[in-house]
Image 1 (cartoon, helix red, strand yellow):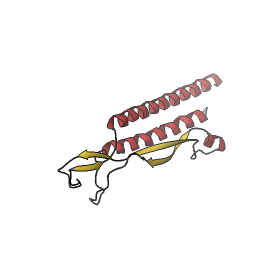
Image 2 (image 1 turned 135 degrees about the horizontal axis):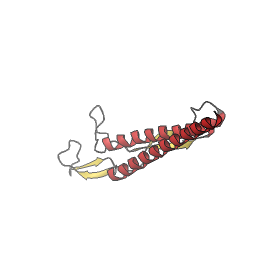
Image 3 (image 1 turned 90 degrees about the vertical axis):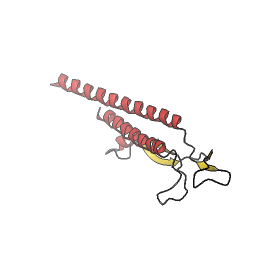
Image 4 (image 1 turned 135 degrees about the vertical axis):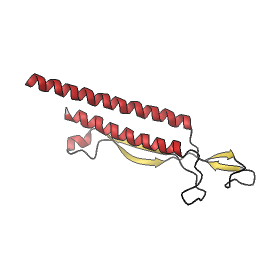
Length: 138
């Protein structure tokens, strides 16, 4: 039964990381410059999951659960936007801006939140089952 808790915990950690990446995308949806003030539009990122939990203490535990294998930079091309007042605008007044769809990011955030909540519910159910089993044994 403790394996079930490990699986739920790994799912919560993975979804928390995913939510952090989504929040970064939303926060930088209009970012055109890097920290040095140079033109460097933000590129969308995504958390990539993989099966297993490398941080588990046993071989059996490492085979269960999920983890964030990597955080990948999206391959979506930048979007052309008309912003004639921008210091980064071309002669025609257009700037290449991040291609981040805020609606899609919000849907992804809701999905990550629901998956996190499902893992919390699974962990609570597992704890309740272990508690009941211990009561029966006592």
